[in-house]
Image (cartoon, rainbow over all chains, first blue to last red; front, top):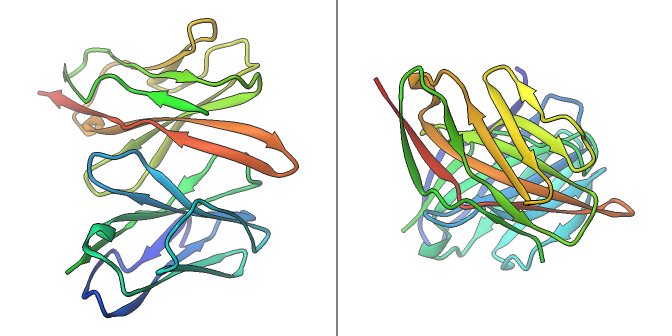
Length: 112
Length: 117
């Protein structure tokens, strides 16, 4: 499999659930990103990992917890989310933190 | 602060015609890059084209070209010979290199392009 993959593609969860989003890149990149895309809002950068270390966290609530166990995998752990967290969550990767980012297909999250 | 403005929330174009999607940016940095991404209804973000602030030539990639006017701080995307598969959201984005491995990537709100048969 090539490119950037994300699972699951769709997720519905209650406010008390705990779930995780997974991202995997097969491009040999060393930087990975989580974005949130809400309806009618610009794409929001959430987290950046470079060489498996978190280098940026844009004031994201603690109910979102990222994990990068190696340069090919990135997780976003979710717990006690709010309905306003419903959005499309996109993962991206790049070779170096300043190069073109390649995106996965996204996970459509609905919080009930 | 960096800012990307896409003033066209939605646009229509006839199949086989060319269309220009507007993007203006605001930054005080001299070194930056500009991207265009396409997002079909399926949700994935597809990289289309990149222009560096020091590139003298306008970027082109197949049917896509970027009309870069540095003095006007504009980076419009031109799609020639539109196809039905071009119907999607299009996002303009800018990256600022801050040095020491630090950067900032800013996206516009997007333009929804609909291609009419």
